[in-house]
Image (cartoon, rainbow, N blue to C red; front, side, top):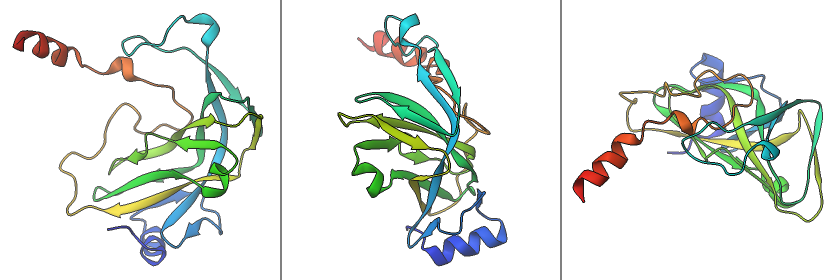
Length: 187
C-alpha cells in the first residue's frame, strides 16, 4: 500500500520515518520530494579501460553548489536529505516529471530497503543533446513509500548503510563467486 501525505506527516511527526532536513514544499499527495546535495562523483574514465563487476571503479569527486552534466553523460550525486526507514516500510525513488521532461534521468536502482538509513546516492544521466546545469538544493526526485505486510526479518544492513555522501558502486564487494562455482558444478 502506498502511503498518503497524511500518513507520511504522522510518521514524520512521531519519528517513525526520518527525512531531514525536510522542506515545506516537499510533501506531495503520495510522496516526498528530495533535493540535490552538493557532492558528486564522475567515473574516472581516463584511468580505466573497462568497467567490471569484480574490480573497484575509480571516481573523481566534486563538491559544489552546481554541476553541469554534458550531453549523454552519467554522474553520481547525493540527496540533501538524510532518510531513515522503519523496518516495515520500503521506498521507490522516482525522478520528478518536470526534471525528466528536460532529458535528465534520475535513478538509484529505484529501491530503498526497509531499515535503510543515510543519504541516497542518485544515478543521473543526461539524455539530452545539450548540457544540463543542476543546482544543489533543488528538488530532483521523489520517494514513494510503501508499507510491507510485516516488518522485515532482516532489515537492510548492507554496504551502503549509513552513507552520508555520494558513494560509488561497491559491486566488487559482492560475493557472487559461490554462484559461479555452483553454476559450473551443475554443468
